[in-house]
Length: 531
Ligand SMILES: O=P(O)(O)OC[C@H]1O[C@](O)(CO)[C@@H](O)[C@@H]1O
Image 1 (cartoon, protein in one colour):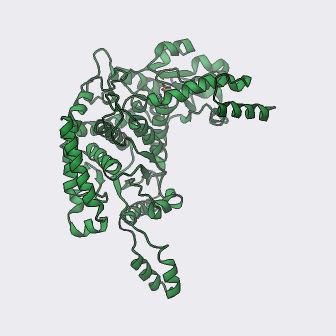
Image 2: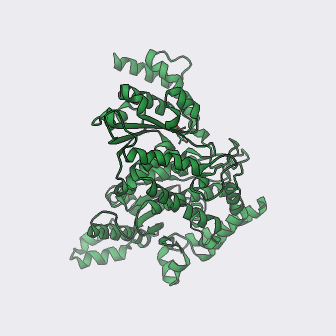
Image 3: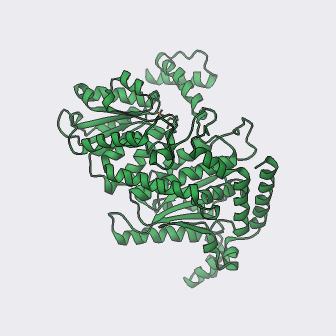
């Protein structure tokens, strides 16, 4: 685990990358009939197929050796033991304790806190806690970033399980967000939850004040909060019995398992919320104990490092073939890019290599009809992570077969492409003239050799969703260790926040003292346009 060991492991990985750049996925499949079994791994009904990555078994061994040299297992165990792995803030990162996988710090009791917010969720669902106009028909969650994306993504993913009040999510400080969310709601039958770890986020406080005004006389009895800053909730006027706390060892983007999950719990009920936690705990157990060669988050993390550093590909597309996972790419975008979008190492030195790729995506099949053109024939290689379920939830099975077929087809087409000779033969078989074939074959050629990983599970239910999220959480952790960055802070969001704070008054007054030339000119134009 010394610097020379790590450097030597990187040299090995890079040597394999040079070797593999000279071959193609077609060739790799042709020469190895056992490629799938060598380059896939399974946990119960969850399979990860990375046989279509530009890897082979020796390269994978070199990556696993890199993980050993970088001390991934030791750092994982330190995180699980509650060590202050968030070194810049002197905090632990114990989201695993929220699902009972590892102990919480002495004095903190996540199980009791969970029981308390689940009791409240059930009381709302059963009409024991009601609004001024009767049982709640709707819950509006106000939060942003990790205090929004987790529950909002999960509420959409688990729509078939929502049998409590309907859920709405407001995050943006653009007043249109709140206005749209409440347009058709009755304030007397709406519960508003303010979700904010710090209870100091500008957008959330602005929207919480708007909500308090909208609720009017109902506000006192119809607001609740999820926060690690219980005193600030009290100052805002939310009674202590409606405040559900958590701890500074839960990072915002890792907080859906805490009271931040309250809106989800109200929607799906306590039992399903516990199944969601159990799914994450199953992945935790696997991550903490499975050998490297079969450890799913470790393997996914290493594939990410391979793509980013050995192959030099700067972005990754995340494409769930699951309409209800529409917000999953945005969720993973925050998880990965806020965790590992870092430019200095744990020691504060400039990172010697690229860190988090840009993660983006949309659900299939819609994505096929928008940006897949570039994935197949553009000049950049964009690795893809596909997610698919063998069975639909509450949807037409015939449709699901078409959905799944498209997912498998895309992975195959990206990997193997269609050569110019094949394109020409295809056109000839369709009766095209030799002139048209000569002219169009280059346009109809697919280079292939475009990598992807397919994550396939049985069905998207609360357990499976919890397991999937934990898989991506641990993937981000593994990559953070290899890049030697702090995956648990987010100082990069501060400068913009501070600057905006100074400019609010400038927009109101038109006076931009101390601002740069471009900002001053834009403020002048705003002033002119507002006349
Ligand atoms: O829950 P809070 O404290 O309102 O913060 C919201 C989000 O803002 C961030 O701090 C980034 O601006 C995220 O990390 C966090 O999830």
